[in-house]
Image (cartoon, rainbow over all chains, first blue to last red; front, side, top):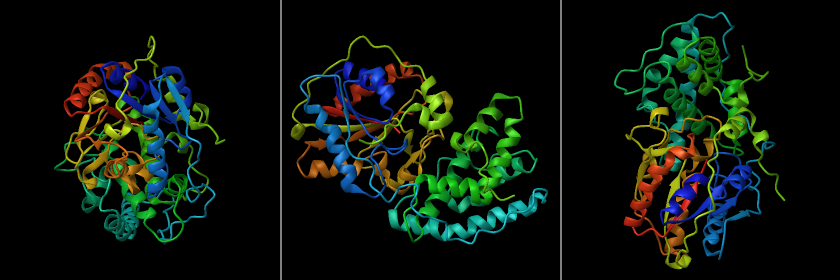
Length: 254
Length: 156
């Protein structure tokens, strides 16, 4: 990000930047940067808090009035409560019990599809509320959930994944990245739409990787890919499960 | 004083961030923009954003950028960043968490800035910054063509 500030300003366009990692910004010294104490992925703080977001934006744009630089200012407020990790949150859905480790592939498939079906009404509700969905980078939508999960299930149960028909995905397993991004987005949008306290990002990830069938399938697929030698498999293994969840949470069923 | 995010707090993703090369610059360029009330502002994101139907970002296209029209439907904006080590659930619930287009329009409507640009841009941040010099110079020309006087740079 800081590099872009140098390049754009060097080409004649004034810039002001949000900084999420202060150490990097200190080293790169872009013209103007506002460091914000928010988690990675949330440069303007919590979702659905326009007043707070507007304040961050005003603070970043305000740096354009500074007479000289480089400027690295600190935004003085943390993200408002309500997204705190300690906020109580649990997915209200009665997720199906997970099969014992040696269950046949078909049982795992049925349970994953049943889980996704339970989430589907809440995914639809999220879309009605926000008017948008972030599912779709794979070229598939939530109406194609079966096609979306098949390659992942095939891999997780010892088979060979094949790209869904009608998609323009990179060859498997590399293309799994986009399918799993869409599946995670489907799960997170559905879970965040349920009534009750607003879940933090950690609430959502703890739930997905610790309690859902999809989480279990992702770990199974990750372990299979990680044991292979080719670069495509190893890189894909690294993106099915984020680094912070590399170790299976103790709460994972199965 | 809020707790600072340090690379060491970010787990393996933070370690990877720390290993990204940091370009060396001699000095810092400085352009004096017009007063904020006259500024035309564009968002330049590194979140790997693009319109639904655009080619998603891949390792091979990591130094490319995507164009986001100022009037793009919120439902048409997707994120295909290559890293999974940052939160996406905020963006999934509210586009403005990573791409504050509604907030920018509000400031323009209130007269706090002159206008929001007709065109915004997204790169994908998981790349050696030096690879972005050429495309960034290209984006600078497009920004100037759109009359933009200030770019708001937004990482994830």
